Amino acid sequence: MADIAPALLSDVRKAFERNVERNVTLRRVNNRIRDGTATTKDAHLFAEELGEDLAQAFRETIKPGVLPDDRMYYNIASRVVEPMMLENFELSQAKASEIQTLVFREAGMGINPVKATYPKGRVSGLIDKITEAQTLEEILRWLDEPLINTTISFYDDWLISNADWQRSTGMEPKIKRELGSAELRASRKRSYFVPCQWCQSLAGQYDYGEQPDDFFRRHESCRCVITLDRPGSNRRAGGWGKMVWQASRAVLDQRKAAGL
Image (cartoon, rainbow, N blue to C red):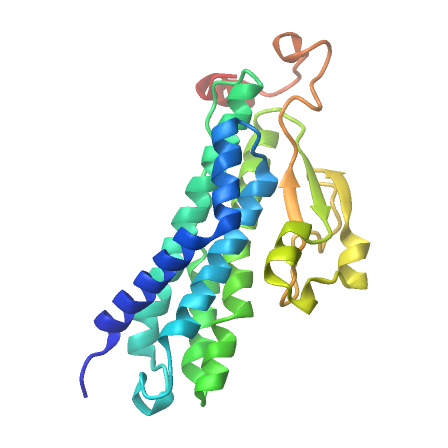
């Protein structure tokens, strides 16, 4: 049996890059970065659109007869799906960090955001479902919403990592969950963008660490937008330069190293 993985990966990547190049929402996000108006909501939009573009690339590339027996065996999925998911992870992390760096600079803070850890177990779970699928239709279903949801979770992981880090340095980050994105609902025209009652119950702004237990959870096809407030909205005692800190020596040393 011929090894189709290298050629298939190349075809998927070309289709993905073509979709990204044509993506109007991604262009708008980059324009807002250029103009200095981007927020972490744009980082979410970027990750979501990457997921959409990759799912579309798989739909465009995997047709009847492309896969042996119309099955995506593990030796194919692990060498085609995982590299593309890793690419989406790196792209989403880089864009979120680029945006957050701009936000920090605007607040007069010479610090850098942190990167999340690649969730290999989560991606491996998706690959397992793909390899267990018995039909092409089932394979493509796993390469659609579950893939998009996983890509969105890459951004969510980034946000959690940065909120954790900010709190550890003495900042008081706030997080917000909004009901989907009107921009995406207009561009994709998918009925499942209508928020459900469960998502509505989680919407709102919270001090990080005091959010509901399910705040970061998503059901399949969830399009809620989770954002991290701009630093400085919770500054203590008269501005950034005059904060009254009460922290351990370890935290103070961490802030010093970070440039706070």
